[in-house]
Amino acid sequence: MALQPYDLFDVRSLLTEEERAVQDTVARFTDERVLPIIGDAFDQARFPRELVAEIAELGLLGSSLPEEYGCAGLNAVSYGLICQELERGDSGIRSFVSVQSSLCMYPIYAYGSEEQRKRWLPDMAAGKVIGCFGLTEPHGGSDPANMKTQARRDGDDWILNGSKMWITNGNLADIAIVWAQTEDGIQGFIVEKGMDGFAAQEIKHKMSLRASVTSSLFFDNVRVPDANRLPNVKGLKGPLGCLTQARYGITWGPIGAAIACLDEALNYSKERILFDRPVAATQSAQIKLAEMARRITLAQLLVLQLGRLKDAGTMQPQQVSLAKWNNCRMAIDIARECRDLLGGAGITTEHSAIRHALNLESVITYEGTETVHQLVIGRELTGISAF
Image (cartoon, one colour):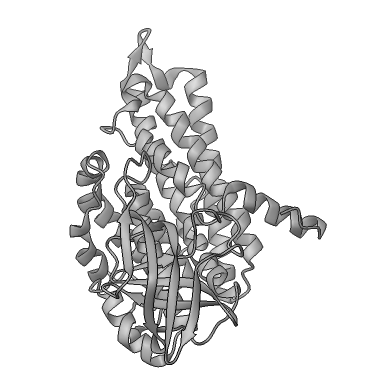
């Protein structure tokens, strides 16, 4: 019995019927709606916003949140499979869903009031309200505690001043989940588009995540009512809790990018004839392809166990760090190797390898650089912080 080339250990057999159905549905969406347009969207540096309504209709926004808020109520493994299949299309599409689901809808659900949940979550699940997440600042990067954005109390309102950078969905967003220093520590605020003093500026000239909107956010004496403050969390544990949710999805996403690259390189190497034989007939090509399959298989097993731990309520942030580090490194190495196997053709966006390789330069950096996650594991092993 022949093995499936992109699932050598039959990981799919370990999924429930519902999980397989979710994967198949999102895979069809990626094949039929994303792949035909994503190369051109990347070339044009255009986020394909026309897909948002379909993404919402499939229940992919806030998919792990309860049905009472208009969400699908899926388990963590299903959310991971959604991320994997979307990123098989493009990291920008997965990033849009990750930010909406894990960085915007999740904090409203986990840290917001019941009134805030009912006001925002159903419309966000339906794609009628788009969110962005404002944590990173121009000088801060991997040190979110060094936050300069501030909010001070003024009667029943808060006055917000500062800026955020590298914000996915920034210019698309109807609301921004913004984290700011207050007298009582870091707190989160729902800042609405159109509030006086709030502006978003799209970041241009990107060579990565070109089919995604990335922005800077600016707050100049923005008056935010206390009703828009997330009341149930204070301190860095709020934004870091959101990042753990989003990083979990990122551990799955790059597997999809790696599979897309391997699929392309495998087919191309069988068709390309050099020195009177297919490239795939050479030992060097087969060793490279086998190495890719090995690393994808290990990544698949890693995230499935991570997902089971998350569904059991026992997942630890350090485990997410290990998986993000491993799987992003795996995917970017495979994308680069596949680009090489494609030869000169590999540098054009008519093929996916260079697009995935460029996108993964961002994925391996955002929500914790590779070095940060290595140091998280180092601290876990030694008990000593080297940050």
